[in-house]
Amino acid sequence: MLRRCFALLALALSLAPAAGALAAGQAASSDVTLKGELVDMACYIGHGAKGPMHKACAQKCADMGQPVGLLTSDGKLYVLVADHGDAGPFEKARKLAGEQAEIKGESAEKDGVNTLTVHDVKKG
Image (tube, rainbow, N blue to C red):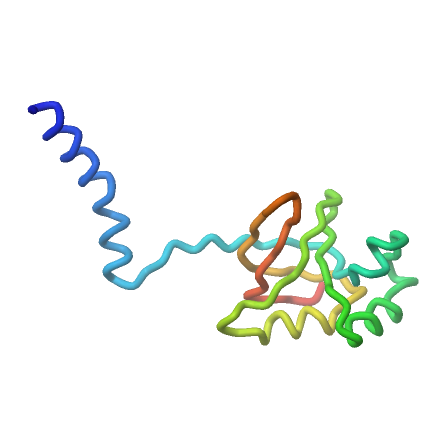
């Protein structure tokens, strides 16, 4: 019985900071900042098209509604997705297709697909 009391007390104490943050309306941020080239997924996946020579095509494809991704310098590809609460940064990123950018957002992976929910974007 005493062990259970100590176990419950330890659990309560370990959860107290998280409960306090939630009660205060402070969610822990899981945003990351990644840099790379914004590629249109159709051309990049289809035939590896990227770089300055492909910029005009990438912008045309993004304007047509093709998905856009961020290709980092280590070769990791993230499909960009809009935040349900504010799609503005995602739309700004789409307009930079074919260019280098720095994107801040929440990354996730499911079934081998990497995504980045765009919260902020900077050219360059």
